[in-house]
Length: 162
Image (cartoon, rainbow, N blue to C red; front, side, top):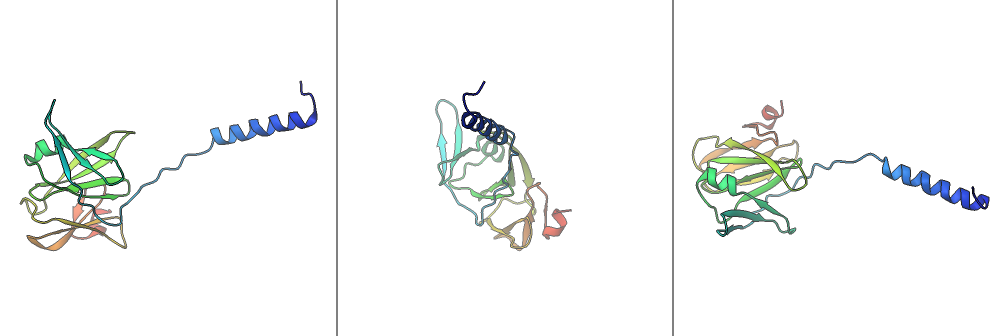
């Protein structure tokens, strides 16, 4: 079967390593941005309306359905990423949108109502240093809100993590 001991040994090692790499466990990374981005929105009207957020890394997020529900097309969006989910809003929006990647090129999304039931004025995101929340500051609200990637929102992050 093998011509010499050296050839058999090399074949056995290659098979063993191939099996090891093929059966190795996968790691899933829940990436978070340390700061919010304010990327521009691109609107394509032909052949059908498409609204796209272009990220600096060359990635895009199509937000056409979100824009239709908000009934406003922003010039820029406020975007951050927390534990693998994108969190998006914009001036004039009534909702915070949480996008959960669900495949290679797709995501599910959910709307989180404005905490004070008014369109957002100058929304700002920052990340909590001590918890898994994004802090939302609004010009028309003196106290910040905490948003968890699950879509929960409360004044304190400990209230949304429960």
